[in-house]
Structure formats: C-alpha cells, structure tokens
Amino acid sequence: MEIMSRLRQAWNVFKNKDPTKSYYHVGTSYAYRPDRMQFTRGNERSIITSVLNRIAMDAAAVSIQHVRLDENGRFLEVIPSGLNNCLTVEANIDQTGRAFVQDIVASMLDEGCVAIVPVDTSADPENTNSYEIQTMRTGKILDWYPRHVRVRVYNDQTGKREDVLVSKSDVAIVENPLYSVMNEPNSTMARLQRKLALLDVVDQKASSGKLDLIIQLPYVVKTEQRRQQAEIRRKDLEEQLSGSTYGVAYTDATERITQLNRPVENNLMKQIEYLTSMLYSQLGITQAILDGSADEQTMLNYNNRLLEAILSAITDEMRRKFLTKTARTQHQTITFFRDPFKLVPAKDMAEIGDTFTRNAILTSNEIRQILGMKPSDDPDADVLRNKNLNAAPEEQSSRVPTVERETESEETGQNG
Image (cartoon, rainbow, N blue to C red; front, side, top):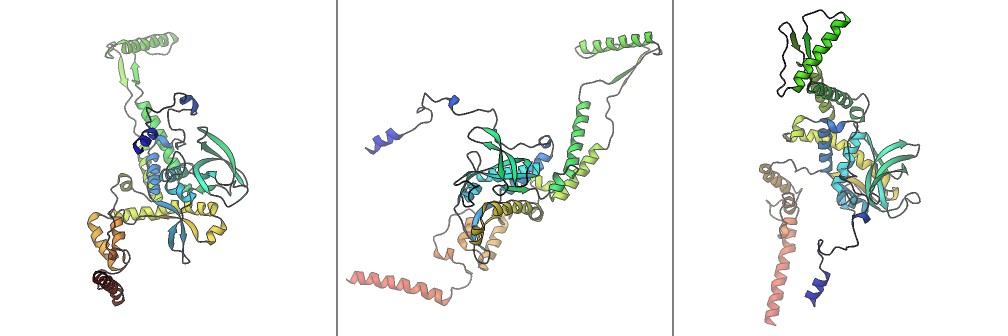
C-alpha cells in the first residue's frame, strides 16, 4: 500500500504538466530579469561600476539580523520574525536575503537615496504600527513630499515597475553616508565620470576609420574654378580608396599627402588617474581591495571606515521605521555581525583558537564551528574554561558522584 501511495503522489515536472496551462496564463515575459537593479547616469559604462559592485558585495557578506539584547545591550538571541526572515533567508520571491542587502547598497550608492518598502504585511501600516513584515523590496524615490514619498517598486504580481505613494514613516529611507563624495553634481565621482565620458569620445573618434588626409595640390585654390577642380580631385581620391580592395590609390607626382590621424597628446588620462586615486582615498579603498590582494590591516581599515558607515545607516533606519517603541523597550534591535575570523590565515587559526579557549572567551565547539567542523560530543567541549588547567574541585565533585551513583545502581540491579 505504501508503494502504491508513493506512485500515485509522484510528480515529474516534465511528464505531469497540465495541457491547459501555457505561458499565456503566467503573465508578461521578458528577455532579461525585470526586477534587477540597473546603474544610472552612465555608471554602467565606466570603472565606477566595479567599485560600487565590490562595496555592495562586501556589505552583503555581513549578516544583518533582528535580535534581542539583554539589559546591558549585549546580544541575547535571534528573533524568528518575518523581518529577520527577509534579511537572512528570503526578502521576496525573486531575491534572497543577501541579494536584497546587495541591492540596497548598490542602489543607495548609485542614486544617493534608496527606499526599503515593505510590500506584504500582516496589517495595513496606515492603520496600525504593529504588523509583521513578510516581503520587502527596494524602491527608487521619484518625488519628495513633506510626509510622503513617491517610489518606483517592482510588482511581482504584474511583472512591472509601478509608482506608489507611501508615508515616510512606513518605509526606510537610507541616504548614502558618502553622498557629497559620490552623488553631488560636482563631486569627485561625478567629475571622474565626466572625464571617462570624454575619454570614450576621444577613443571613438580615434578609431572611427577616417584617414584624416590633407592633399596639397600643385596650384593655388583661390578662385571658384580651382575650388571645383580640387573638390573633383578629392572625390576621385575617395572613390579610389573606397573602391579598392586593399585601399590603394594613386596621385600626381606634384601632389603631396599629409596624414593627420596621429594621436594628439593631452592630459586627459593623467586627470583620470588623479581623480581615481582621489576617489579611492575619499572612499577608504585601495586597488588591492578591488583585486583581492589587500592584507589584514588594509581590510580592517576598509571595514571600519566604509562598510561600517554603510551598514550602520541601513540598520539605524530600519530600526527606527520597522521596530515600534514598544519593541525597542523590549530590547529588540536590528544589528549586523561581521565575522572577525574571515581574514585570518589558516596557519594562524591554531594559535588564535588556543588563545581564545585558554582565556575562556570561546569554547572548543565554538572554535570548531568557525573552522566548519562538526561539534564534538565531549561534554568538556562546551565548557567555557581553560583546558590547560585542572577542573575546579566543585566541578570534579559534581561529576564524580554521578558516575559512582550510576555504578552503585548497576551493582544493585545485578545483585537484585
């Protein structure tokens, strides 16, 4: 019976298709992902894209969670709420929690401000402050009002981006902490972007395929008749070059041809290099961070100066908008956790693990978890004490009698 039940309930995605269903019933289709974040103002065509994408990836690698603190402001437990599910597991039907955070950071750095919009909630946010957030999306702010904003958000029901008017108290509006450096009209990044656009124009002209020739004719071109003869000679030379398979033409022995398509020297590239180094210094990043060769001290400076400011701006705004005053008095908060061992080489982990366990900071199983190993079944692996010292007398007495009582009970059972 169990085998027959399994056969009746078995499903194959290719064989068990309903013939009445087709792609006409599932909504609008696109050749590319319509909800994907896209850079604006020409950033997608420059080296700025790689910088913004690297910062967004590093920020998304940090865990953001909805947690509860104790009376002293220390981490106590993770709250299994819908908000925490959006930040860690699934923000919406299209994005995981990590992809959602990367979308927030990339949109914020590119546009200057980004709106985090709760799409599906357990109650209407206009009527109550106590509701459960189920799905969230990022929105582009189009218009600013005294107490409202108009945002453009992707609607996964229709497959289109729609403009909605929402209250400022119901959405988290995150502003780029480096707005004056990256998003102002005359900021360093805007100037670099304009210089890169000029460089693209120069490169396009240099590789346009024009010969840029000057023909010196054996007569003076001052009268109208001489100009007509020169024009006929120019067109004749163009037809020879364009009509020839190998681009070969002939000229008179008295004519002289001068080629002008040599590169013209300018300081555009030096200005771009100068603005790039200035932007890196103002953002707190280096070329070593982008190519992955940065040492631990450089990454620590990058994390403290840049990522901490970005993540704090996101968590502070979400804590202010998505947690009620009652929830904050119950020691609920939204915070981020950075793994301090992510940049530690494997050869240094043994010494670090010994130091942390010897000073009763981490247990042996917690060290094993950092290394990606299964926890040990030894009870001492979960005890927070120095393993190099003998256990306290009360700890020994609390364990030894237990063994003796078990032995006595076994002997009594055997004698009985």
